[in-house]
Image (cartoon, rainbow, N blue to C red; front, side):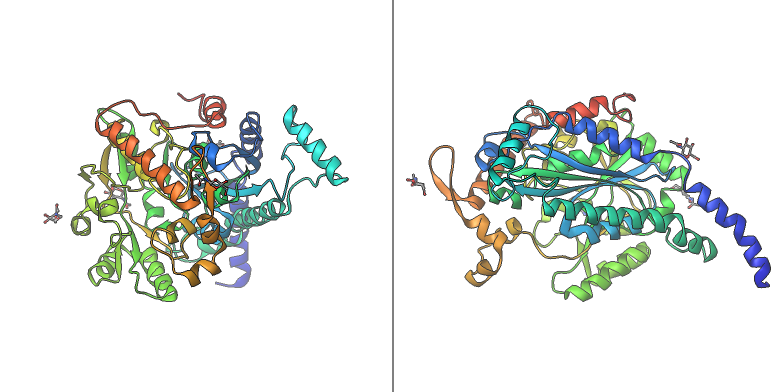
Length: 478
Ligand SMILES: *[C@@H]1O[C@H](CO)[C@@H](O)[C@H](O)[C@H]1NC(C)=O
Ligand SMILES: *[C@@H]1O[C@H](CO)[C@@H](O)[C@H](O)[C@H]1NC(C)=O
Ligand SMILES: *[C@@H]1O[C@H](CO)[C@@H](O)[C@H](O)[C@H]1NC(C)=O
Ligand SMILES: *[C@@H]1O[C@H](CO)[C@@H](O)[C@H](O)[C@H]1NC(C)=O
């Protein structure tokens, strides 16, 4: 083909792609509506550890929101939460999926170092605090603390790259190359959430479930799946979500009658003995390859079911041998502690219990409520799998086992969690052991109530409840 002709053929293609990218949703509107509804109920009082363990809900301020301008006909919206140090994982997740991805990004603000409120225009106590802080420092308060301004810039940068890449160069490249090229990228939606803290240890216990609820609010497709940001689906997932037969099967199953289904894909990870670099390669092969590849790596003992070595009941219920052989969805019985990720009807999701901060029991309690209170059926998807990307452990996880002194000293997060605090009843204990005591007890009570079919309600904050009622893509539909 001569160059002139191929260029001639390219022009309509380029125009078509450029136009496709601009149809549909005006993203800015959604972002602004969400931000204003969420912040209209914001309470700027900083949270203390003792308030949290006395049952106070999270108070999160939405600093900014981003909403992809690109329209998509994909019915499954992935939602996730993260701290800013995982931005590269969000990028990897976004590059691996062609549908919508919503992320709530957490940043904590220690009021000792930054006394200002976020909302200089808000009435009442917030304004008085801001004014007195300004007087004390003899200067105008900067609009945002430097770390927040920095976070906002990083997210803006990621957002711009994901929007631009997917509308131009990569789409064109994908169209010109074989149809095996993975499409790039997701339609990214993000909210930067800041929390004012009166105790520094709370910064290491992210309000995981409150953040998941924020991310859930950014879902506007019929189906949703909460996924940790360090996971991605195998690339065949992109073909499945475009297959209307497959999607219709999910839409019917998740709809509710006689019982709603949550469709659960198994998750895998590289075995713990692999070096970080080897693990990264294994993960990439498992994501790019087919089910046969995953199956072989698993049989060879290179891949393992997610965390199966430290928690058999968390993901064991899948029966991975059966998954390898199966090509139709199959039902597994809920067993205590089972905590799969899963695709469900977003309107049937009861929300995540916000009393759970940190890393323990947050997802387990949600799955348990789905199965025990809302009568969800758990069906394993034979053709979908997720893979966990390797990374360093967070403080509360490192502390699950006794920590050697030399490790303690080099980890400020660990040192902070080992500090002794005085609890509401006057006793003294480390922040870590107080955290464990509180969440272990919460977990015990929730589990007992759910097993006995007694009343159990997740804690949902007033900002979330207001948004769920008022946001056009939530309230208007039910
Ligand atoms: C997005 O595109 C689809 C298919 O082209 C169309 O049916 C839908 O109305 C569009 N959505 C919006 C909000 O424009
Ligand atoms: C679409 O999904 C259905 C149901 O899983 C499957 O039978 C069919 O082969 C798929 N079609 C394509 C083109 O992959
Ligand atoms: C797991 O599945 C395999 C293959 O279908 C089956 O033989 C085995 O009995 C199952 N194991 C359990 C514990 O159900
Ligand atoms: C706890 O610690 C505080 C301050 O460090 C101390 O004043 C108080 O007496 C301690 N309480 C108990 C019960 O040991």
